[in-house]
Image (cartoon, rainbow, N blue to C red):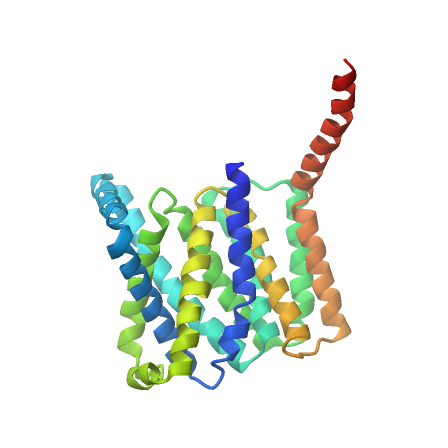
Length: 313
């Protein structure tokens, strides 16, 4: 039962990220740096207020846990937290720019590649095991991604960069699974803030204008709470238990949702070759999860067949 809860957390996180283009497009006239600046600032403030109001014990316990840990663990956890913050800042800036200035499809393509990269990183860096059919699924997914990337090199390369930073971010969370997720997320956002805030002028950030714009602030509060803190917390919670590859596959719900929005909501167009590529990638998702799905299906069928027999005995 607990495992299903973690699967649901990862899936919910992915679906929330999938709908991210809707509120973000409401800020299409604002510089990407301005959006990133306030997303980090407001998310960090929300988390700090949350800790002060009702989570001071958890913060104190996490700090004591880190202090009592061996020196090697303290260095590993501290390094992973800092790296996570840097990856978040880089990934968010690139993703916001692509969604608002390239296309929703280009941003979604990044997260189609991401599960493959995450799975391969989990295999190479963390030693996570993959079944033969899952290797086949990865190959099919790479084929579909190559079909998409062959049409436009620039969006492909931008998507690859976004996917790589997010894949590494997911991997770093596996190194932090024994610590409180919200406390770690606060540390990561604090690191991101120390990188972004000094670059405000370079990123075309105007804090005074942002605070004075009621439309901008309302959408940014929604982005910070509903599309940043909540999904990242759910994602970190799932990664505390599930393998990176499993979370990576569930991450496919995000780009598939965004692609549907691109076609049905934003009115973007796709060539037949692109639609074929999406179908290939969708097939790889089914193939990757096939062993577990077939196993659960067989178990359910067996139970259905066994119950009448047991009732007659």
